Image 1 (cartoon, one colour):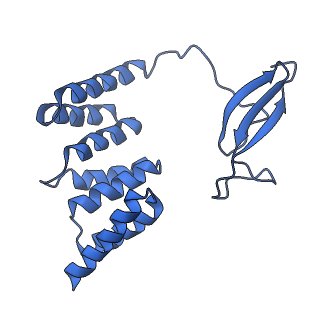
Image 2 (tube, one colour; image 1 turned 180 degrees about the vertical axis):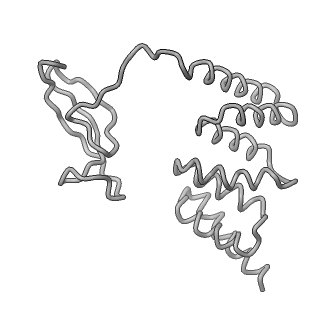
Length: 183
């Protein structure tokens, strides 16, 4: 019965994953992992799901478990390295990229390994610009700015009607901000 329940949970989770319903897939993979904690497919796909939701630290934890399994797919090793790099853990990521280069695809692994070297070299370099908050910014996602006239900035935002924080609903809407004399 435990094996049948595991298979049923995995079928559901895999379907949700294929449909890119990552939030649902995560919950289903957790149920499957409760029955078989070291299943490499469940570990890899729950990690992928967290990565797709930009929850890199949580994804890293599951990738870390998955890459220890013998039957881990090369793609999982590469994605684990990508997550490490996105977390700014360039030395660790480089080691995983080199492992991927050695065992699976030298061109891809070495390319990403070099990207870690580049990122470490650029970490303390001057970017040539400074970032500062403006009154049009909000604590939620504001993106896609375009100057439609020299005095108007149009952008998209996930802000709510009351100007509060993100409430979990995707409500991106265009907004217009007047550009003041100070820019």
